[in-house]
Amino acid sequence: MAILEVRDLRARYYAIGPDILKGISFSVEADDFLAIIGPSGAGKSTLIRCVNRLVTPTGGQILFYGREVTRLHGRQLRLLRRDIGMIFQEFNLIDRMSVMDNVLSGRLGYTSSLRSLFRAFPRGDIQHALDLLDRVGLLEFVDKRADELSGGQRQRVGIARALMQNPKLLLVDEPTSALDPKISREVMALIKHMATELKVPCLCNIHDVQLAMEFCNKIIGLQDGDKMFDGPTGEMDQTKLDEIYDMEVL
Amino acid sequence: MKDTLASLAPRPSVDDIMRSRRQNRYAKGAFYALLLIMVAWSVKITVIEDTDWARIGSLGKVIEAANRFFGIDFSLFPSLIGPTIETLMIACLGTLLGVLLCIPAAWFGAHNITPYKPVTYPLARLMMSLSRSIHEIVWALFFVAAVGLGALAGVLALAVRSIGFIAKMSAEAIEDIDPGPVEAIRATGGNGFQVVIYGILPQVLPQVLSVIVFEW
Ligand SMILES: Nc1ncnc2c1ncn2[C@@H]1O[C@H](COP(=O)(O)OP(=O)(O)OP(=O)(O)O)[C@@H](O)[C@H]1O
Ligand SMILES: [Mg+2]
Image 1 (spheres, rainbow over the protein chains, first blue to last red):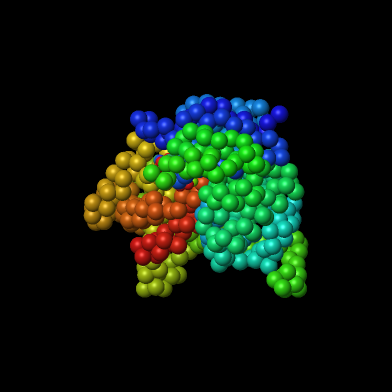
Image 2 (image 1 turned 90 degrees about the vertical axis):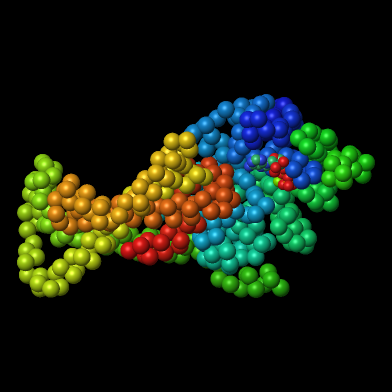
């Protein structure tokens, strides 16, 4: 059974505005590291935001572990979200909090309001956060404020925060666009390594086709809200890439 | 190279982290408890002892009785220092009450988080401009008429007056936040309250505090 199955997904931001997604279908299997590529404005971010419902789709279905999630709200929606980790292009850390508190914030879906007010996370969470910080190589930065770190280090905090949720799926939105090429490759390798080790499937928007070919086993090509390609990385070639990025050339 | 350096640094232990976080919480708790005691004390010697409670009605009698129960005699206050401190306390209480009233006002009045935009947003904005466009003295007169001459009227007038300023500045600070962290906390499955205290508050706190101190 597919972890995630998307059927004929449609989305737009304004009632009378244009369709941003025009009926997208695909599925994510348990061991997939799936790249979504396409020109700027194609709808890549919109697509992954529909999955954890930061954007509400206007049509179609999203089945997460066989369960339809496009109409969830309130507590049910929060329970869905805590099963899906997200890594962002701009890291989206809480600048004025410590690295530790940022990583712990990945547990908020499991933490009561009162406990979270006093940042009184249970011992198990602290242990887990420390292990993850070790794995992403940030052990000596536990008490540092998030805004004291470099870009690459901030993204590592973002990765640890997402993994703190014990996610069943990782959504990754352009994790390397704010980083230089060397750090980009390191960050992609880290995400891939952790995802493989923890057996979490990934859905990853990525600008850099090179990185997509190198790290992902499947690729979806989007262009202006339509799916232009869907297949294993090996089937992607220059002609198909030219077709997907066609709009950008014009 | 980096790895050897990192492994030389002592690995922080879970116990150490738990302990320092607990101490942090206790320190914060103690600070807020102290604040609360000071507020209660100020309320007692300014508002409670200085108000014509009979005028307000039966609730007033309850408070008056509670006051007699405490029975501390402040007549020993040196006659000059007393009123000065009292004035200071009125200012503090007024601002504090204002800050409390500002929380819903800023929440409703920031267009990016207001609960139901067509109603709550204009409502909050109306309250803010009302509070600013009416002069302090007029507010004071209004409250003197309502609750009688005394400290309570002063506190209420100051509080209402500060909504205009503090809430407006806070709402604008909230409108200017980076939506990224807010989205990140929502994406972890955090509830509305957690989004506010993790996603919004840390971003606006420095600005809001400086506005409050300025308004004092
Ligand atoms: N919050 C929003 N409100 C209105 N329109 C939006 C919003 N977010 C995106 N759009 C529009 O939707 C379209 C697709 O945007 P989206 O961010 O999904 O593209 P993308 O493929 O992720 O692009 P990029 O590579 O630049 O990140 C764009 O035309 C954009 O202007
Ligand atoms: Mg995008």
